[in-house]
Image (cartoon, rainbow, N blue to C red; front, side):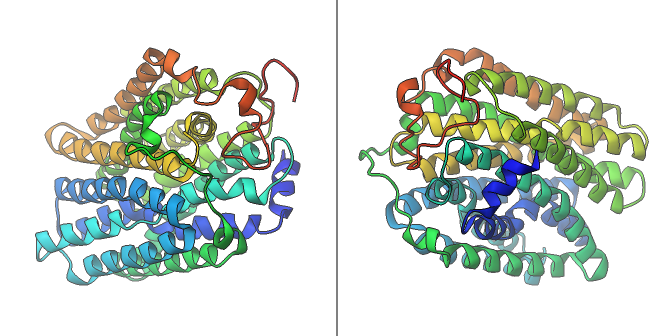
Amino acid sequence: MAAGYLDILRARHAARLLTGTLVGRLPNGTAHIAIVLFTRAEGGSYTLAGALTAAYGLATAVGQPLLGRAVDLYGQPRGQLPAAVLSALGMTLLALSGLGSLPLAYLAVIVAGIATPPLEGGLRALWPSVLKGEGQVHRAYAMDAVAQEIMFTVGPLLVTLFVSLWSPAAALLVINAIGVLGALSVVLSEPSRTWRSAPREAHWLGALRSPGLLALLGAFFFVGLALGSITVAGVAYADDHGRESVYGWLMAALGLGALIGGLAYGARQWAGAPEKRLRIIVGLLALGYLPLTLTPSVPVMTAFAALAGVFLAPAIACSFIVVDRHAPRGTVTEAFSWLVTTFGVGAAAGSAVAGPAVELGSTAWSFAVAGAGGVAALIVLLTTGKLLETPVRTAAVVTGSENDRNGAVEPGFSSGHKA
């Protein structure tokens, strides 16, 4: 299992790019948790916490594809670093001003969200220029998803640690300062400085002119909705049990489950079209969310959270393959950024719905939002099967992907031949 990942990390620049991207994305990966804890500490309601988180998520959704397109057009350093600094300044404004002025609080999270640098899409665009050999790039996608889950496992614990050591405001400041350093490490690297996107056809829709990509984005809106609702539902569950630390453990368990699932997914070679495999994985993901509605004791609930996360990283890793197959030429960063955007919009919607669900119903109701999101994602994939099975590039061309200058393909994927 580890050999394939080690081969990737031994490649020049690979470890730096992966680490720098994860550190740079730490503010975005933990913002929903930090905003909820900050709002509650300032005396705000669950509904306000959900609304601020939703505002941040929606702002990120707007900013990611715009910044992704800018990166495709003008290069990574000119798009990533200024955005990272501006985003950190937005969170700094929130931490220093508090909730005394709600318009200012909303402005702060909107600035932080809209300026979130597209490091995630940028890394996936860089892999082909760093890695060589059949299968390495798409194995890197799986490793990328696994590494994200490490961040989602460690991130909540870091936030709760900083909150317990100092305060929610201090946690916001420290996390965002660390994020700027991560972005700086990426944009100063040689691959980031020299990377240029493939020539693109001028079109105002950009990556969105691909029907298959639109179908995938529709499904991942609901995956994001499920995950976003768990963020708020987890806080309510922790409050029900009188311990703030329970929230961190639930989120860490969710990330740990995804880490295990991602490692298992990336360890083997997969035959067949990734679009069909994605439907199966999302179906299993939906099933994993349903037991959370039982809201049992903390140890059992922690185990359920880990189970709910098992198929998250495989779903994300498989979606990267589908994005690469359906992205029009020259739109790779933008296409990946649209996936981040759609996921963020869904997470924002989930947070916004889960808050009132707690206050009008119960904690179990807010977890039911997650189950409904998973089922809806599966329905979208099933009803758009024909669109997803017609990639922008035909099977004969996929093995030499236009977004993959080294000709790497997904491990085990070919048109009926062994890899």
